Image: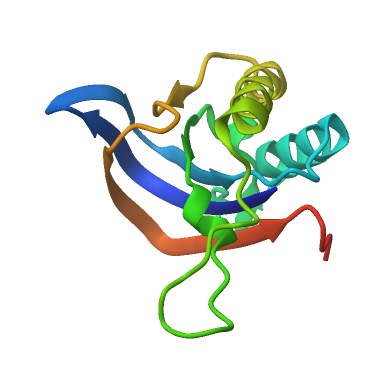
Length: 150
């Protein structure tokens, strides 16, 4: 799994001109899934996302995680995070999982994030043409790949 995590003041997902989900302060998480991903990847990544100390404490130091701030999470599936750009100028998405594999993993990730956060999260709609709006706070943007746990 690959995730791009952005600390936001606000974020929303719109589908067919209807707002599907919107959050205030918290995290926008763009999630790419590949066939090799497992429930272990889900558990590790969810714990990492909810445990990232990237929110300011009373001294303005990034020392708090999302649970400590009471922030929200908006999770959006994004197969393009597995784009291969080695050959030519047209990205290949062959590593991105197809819906029969990706949808169950995406749904498990939603449940795990909700469990780890302790409240419901906002989501996009898998496979939909989504318009994602955000106000990046910082900016703080972090990229995580469960196959390269740095």
